[in-house]
Image 1 (cartoon, rainbow, N blue to C red):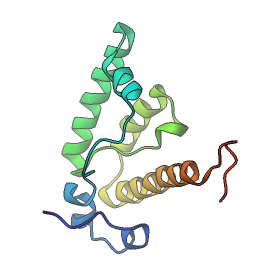
Image 2 (cartoon, helix red, strand yellow):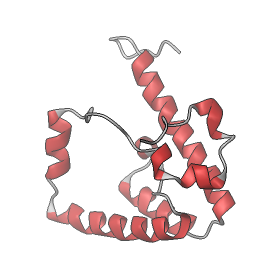
Image 3 (tube, rainbow, N blue to C red):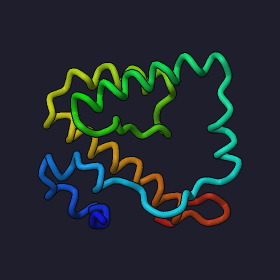
Length: 126
């Protein structure tokens, strides 16, 4: 079994090989998605299927080039921006893309922590 995912403090100390290792980022344990979320993910309209196919194709090419899946803070981007990001970031070198991916992981973590720290009124306690 792989070690636990790295903490935020440890991310900057990872080598490129450690960063791209899926064992460092794999989510373990039961899914934490709500049943409603699972239903929403299963239901794709025809207009969304073309976008999904393009995302899948672009992400596969990205994984082939960089060795890890594309990371972007989806809360800050609509589908068109995510597709544009996949296309433009293909032009990055490995070091530049790892730096960008780490920045995106930090943005995602910030939103998740803000959600955990918010009270019932939605005001963040951070």
